[in-house]
Length: 97
Image (cartoon, rainbow, N blue to C red; front, side, top):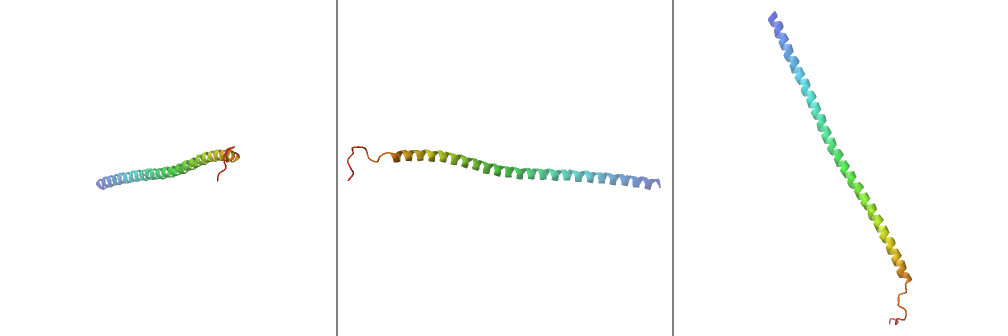
């Protein structure tokens, strides 16, 4: 009777260790899955951040370009006004035929 009792204790210990190993393996697997998800979401976040940065830079460049074009247009308008105030012919020039 003692032999069967020892045998069942050994069997119980073996299954306890197997169960503990399975639990640890599942926890390690879970952690690996969570780390993989973290890496994937980090990659997706970086892609979206880069797209947003590109849109922001395009917007800033267009605002700078429009500001530069506005100042050039004002300068051209002033030059055109000055040119329109000048006479087309020089004084004492011969009339064109």
